[in-house]
Structures are given as C-alpha cells and as structure tokens.
Length: 413
View 1 (cartoon, helix red, strand yellow):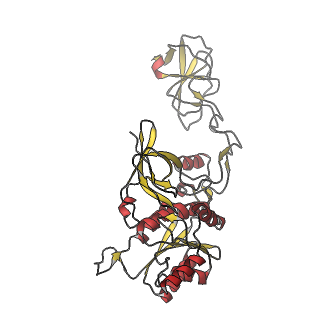
View 2: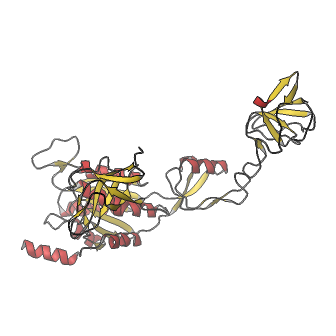
View 3: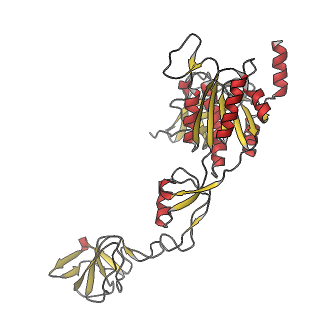
C-alpha cells in the first residue's frame, strides 16, 4: 500500500531539474504595481521610473575650498578685499582687477572672478590680500553642470534605492518618487510536532524555527512578512489558514507537509485551491519543494527541515520576490571557488552545500561548514556561500573549482 502510494506520488510529481523549476517560478512571477513614497523613506525600494535631472548641478560656479575669489590674469601684488561670500548667500559685488572677495566652500563665485585661491596660499593685511602663487582660470571651482546636465538620466527604473540614490533624489528636489510596491509574504508553519519558541518541549516536539527564519529572509529580500502562525496536521485547519494567507498576501510560504506521508497535506490543498506547477525537484536539500499559483498569487510549499527551507528560499523564492519589486538583478552573485577539501556528491541531484568563502593568495577558497544534513541549521549560520555540486560519481576533489552563490560578505585577508 505504501509503495503504491509512493509510486503514484512520483508519477504525479516528476523530478524536475533545478534550472527548469527556477524558470517556471519566474515565468509565473508578476511585477507588482507602483506607488509613490516620500524620498526620505524610499531606501530599500526599487525605482519604478527613470529619473532625469530637471536642472544643472551645480546651477552656478561654486568654490571647492575656503579662500579668495580672484581674476586669474590679475597681476596686482595686493588686492582690495570686497567682503565675504558665504554658501547659500548672494554672490556679492563684482570682482575685477586689483580686487578679491573672501569666499567659503560651496559659495557662488562672484561676478568677474574666474578662480579661487586657498587661504594657505595668501597673506591678508589691512583689508588687502596678496596671492603667493600663480593662479589659473578655473582653479578650485566646480563649474555649472559638471555633476549633472539638464535632462541627463540620473537613475534608471529598476535601480535599488540606497543611501546615494536617496541623496541624488533629494539633490534633484524630488520630495516623492515612484517605486514598486513591496510584496506581502505570508508564512505558515505546519506540523503537530511544533511549539512556539519559549514554550516547553513535550516528548516528540520541536520548536518552530522555520517561520521565524523565513520571515527574516523575506524581510531581507525587501518584502513585508506576515505570520500565519502554526497549523497542526489537520486538513480543515490548514485549508482555512491557507485561504486566509492568500487573502492577506501576494506570496504564501509554508514549511512542512509537502512530502508523501499521510499527514503531508499541503500539495493536495494547493491542488484544490489553485494550480501546482511542480512538486519535486532534483535538488539536495529541498527535493519535495512545491510551487503553485492561486490566481496571480504565488505559493511555495517548502520542506520542513530548516536547511531545506532556507536553501530553497534562496534559490527559488528570493529571486521571485526581487522580480516582483522590479529589480533588474534578481540572482545572487555567482563565482568560481576552489574547494579546500574533498566534497561528497549525489548521483541524481544537484546539491547546494553550505560553505565559507574567503580570499587566499589572490583566489576565492571555500571550506564546508561541516555536516550537510538538512536538519543541521547551524550549517547555514556563518555560511556566506552555497556551493553548487552537480550530480555524479565519486567526490569533488580538493583543489577543484566549483560554482558558488554568494549569500553573504566575503572576509578580506
């Protein structure tokens, strides 16, 4: 009976290659609608419009130092001081031969002047100033438009907004900006064995770590995370929670309940509520990953083992969330690394092994984080890379080059 059920399950859900499964996910992933937000709060979002400069930057010739505004060709030994020119104030009286104006960094060059001399290269006495070095026209000046010209493209649509981008938007005088909406992600943990962190463990119980980890991963990817709590292995209860999740969110993530056991209910429930596009992938860890759509909304049934849940999130869910936000680059950086020691490989599945990558003698070197069993969550803590080990016989030998997805910062020597 068990074997018959397993055979039916495997016929229903063929083992899909990783690349094919990833393509299916992205083919069904929409880009979300656009909203305007205040520029001051736009960091972490993705631009939904191409931003052009409405004016020259800077709009006037400005001093880049504290000093004296002068006429470069003036040969007078001593020059009469006309006063101070301050940043943000009118540029003052015209400067001509035999005259100079004290000027501060960022201030507008007064009429007639064509250079600025630093205080250190001058001598001031009795309302006059002597220039102690040769001066060329344009010295210590930032001419109009050197930063930006009128109509120049400043930021392309699809650009992630960081600190520099917020600064540019403010410089252009834009109080609001068009960005893609953040996806709302509802996360549900399933299983009779789960208890909340902080609760005592009864025999056979484990604490629910997946919901916490997956919500953190969703937020790191720019999404709004919604907790749907835990649902025991009860069909009616899980159906109710799933429906509530689809009402609340653009993306629904579950963990657990996607294998072949009699208490694995997520696959049949997603079949009932929408369309399941695949239910098994040739990946370790994460073989029973399930992807479905319910209308325009996405559903990811992730495995219950903690490492499997986070690895499949990295490979399949994170790129989808970034695409929904209009990002042009949705995949982690992919590099070639040299492995320090031999690595096991499977004969039928691509494996993403957790590792620490570092620079050594001018190349990227990788070391495994230890045992790669999918329940050992500590193998993800501190890992900054997923080594992509293709299926085959034998081992990946020490010194071999393998591809890796960078999921964290690389330590410098």
